[in-house]
Amino acid sequence: MSSPPEQIDHLLEAVCKRVRKSKAHFLHDLALYSAVVLLARCGMRISEPLRLLRQHYRGDDKTIYIEKTKFKKDRLIPVPKAVITEIENYLSVRKHLCPHDENPYLLAGRKQNPLMDYQVRFLFHQAVKDIGLDQSRKVIGNMNFSSPTPHSLRHAFAINTLKDIKERGKSPQHALPILATYMGHSEYKHTTTYLKFLDAEHRQGLIDFAISHQGEI
Image: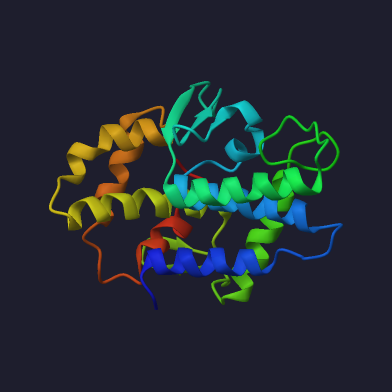
């Protein structure tokens, strides 16, 4: 079993391979792929990339403004360079294929609409099956395990961020306030939950925590 970051990379590769190359589907599928990238690389909730408007993306300063999230909070987050590259690629393709496009959303759905939640979920679950991460529900100790959901990417992002900080000799505890703000947590305790799993190297991997707590935080 590969490490969680490698699993995420593998999953994104599988999602990318699911992008259909036909003229009727390519741009739409590329938008769905971009949404999954934002979930995995920025720890967003599934509703957040779908509601982003064009003006919420600020390529010049490499940030995204997330407006009125789950707890009615706004936040401005820095975006990794690799994600900026993916977004710029999508926008370039979109401009080329639809030069007169007036869809207000950053990731355009059909006509003037945003992408739909179920479309992202369907693509995600197909990719999960492609790489063999789908599994039937099972219980190990006091933990429930089932197939990953898009929300699992949010948990994996948080845990892997803290793990990376720890491996660089820094204090994950001190990083929690920044991570909590970045992820838009309403209460600090939600972010502290991730600390207890940093030393659980005997488990299958940090992704286990993500899929066992899907739908939470």
